[in-house]
Length: 407
Image 1 (cartoon, rainbow, N blue to C red):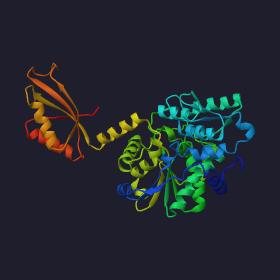
Image 2: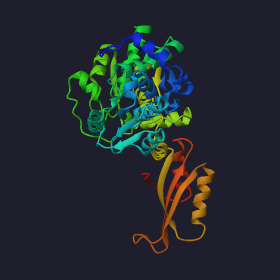
Image 3: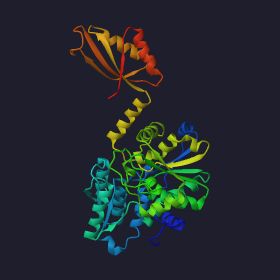
Image 4: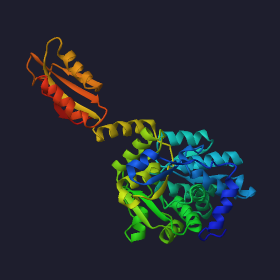
């Protein structure tokens, strides 16, 4: 293969080359999510790969081509985590030393797992662009082969094996919804999918915090300030040169999703599919949830591209989703400071089917009467409709609950 754009035959060759070391992950219809979104929705579970992301495909396809004379010196890569783990894992399998540069702020779970795969980890750079500069300089200084996370024909071809697997399993797919960071995944998938089914719609997804590919294709400056996002796997400030050419040629549109939609998608996948997906991996579902009219009545597939999310973040997302949908409530109840008041409220909550998550008892506040107290209560209810019923039940018993923001 030349340094020009990869072709469908390159993707087919990659599929054969990596088949013995990378899982052909399940592609399953989600009946519940199909009902929610209004389309027949298939999920490609790339979070079940050994390193919990699709990045193994491109990394291995690149590593296997490195000449024996260069393998001894080693390879270098830059990544916020998933590409790092993929390169580290397959480099060790192939006996190639690996050095990985990861930007400051990379989730701890991704750093530790990269080290567990035997790589030397260098934490440097305030973002992916700065880490990339560090990695390329290190590669030149130490004679290491640089394994680009997305803008490499072999990496793109490896990622494209996902497109082959999806359409071989369900040829009737109408639309593929693919997260975009640097563009390697959607580029490979687009090349493969267009060859198998030219009429298929290929839709990219970026977070509102990092719409770099969408900006590049629309002629908007890709210069972008650092931003907080739960989808750090697609938080790329400058898309690839090869990938933007492929996306311009093969991708029908790019949808931009907000952080709340990505959080909701993570929570839905956890609660409905019982599967852990990171922010970038949930972006495709987020786009479908935000744009149901585009997919109504269609057969759509999206890639759960990774599952490497910190447990602390996952727990926060789950609780925040309960707040967002009205199932986690907080209210303050003034009471008289006498025996039995707390028991009365607890009884009412229990009769309404509410689960008490937290309760605070304040009798020392100077704004209170010396004979009064305040209860600060956080409860979980089964459905959002039960919240008003719960408050009305308290009011009916003579209490005056005041709703507060859950914090």
